Length: 381
Image 1 (tube, helix red, strand yellow):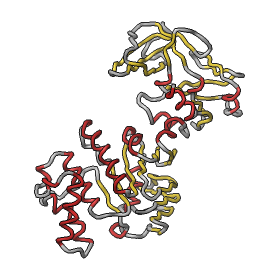
Image 2: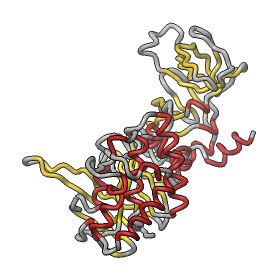
Image 3: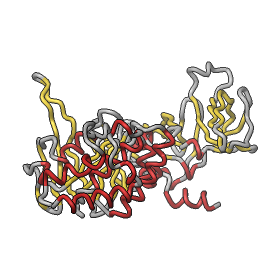
């Protein structure tokens, strides 16, 4: 087991006369036995960060330490890490047993019978004992993924690195493998860095998640902290499906004035904003309520589109009944699946003040977030 420390890690590439910064001054600590998920959109630098940890990419600047040992110049085979690739990277001419044992045969002096025993034990753990003498081409995608995991596990590394290992699987198998991976990591207790673009994987699998955008680290926290208390507007928009609603507003006294509504705020919220007046108001779709009564935080809206999802409905609302729906400012609400609304209905939407987020429009920095305690109280109710 091991700790990982990334201290101002930077990676640049040269493209002719242009220097491209792929990873920009990223610092984070990964605890012994922790499952950290690095998540972000395509091209944000997450795989490059993983490859620097693995030793497959050189580090332009900064320091990478494993158990307080600086490993910037240590070759990948000497870092005691194991990596699972998106493509599985299995040798097609070798059996499953040979694929799993190859790394040990090349990097250790262990006798063959001991290697075979380790492979057999790992195969049993992963439920692939009966596949050990097959070739990868005879296996399904899920079985190949288990073999790739087994090849990493059998080496008993200090750190697991996983680069989008589930992206080639169908949705049902991906959900099953998420559960298996969490159970496996809990049992093994190996420090794990897992890269994905899938926010569902990040929210469900990680002890903590690290969110990257354009090579820069946006936030490192538990999934719930990132969801309910995002550091900035990017984090708030990236996590959640449907995404958080955003409205440009201007602070005038104790009211937030938008193009389509005015929203009063109390002194506690106002005090968080300081001197900033150009703001973005955010509200998650599941926090929006459809109610009967009108008030300061309730607005008459028109239903544009309803997307039934079974247990819930995603409802697209707009404030101006005469506006072109394609260009009108929309409010998205997630409501109970038995709450029947139809296109063209007029409904009253509540935006609860204890659920709003406010961001500096110029910097994107979060100035006021819904507290996790308030969110938990709403669930308890």
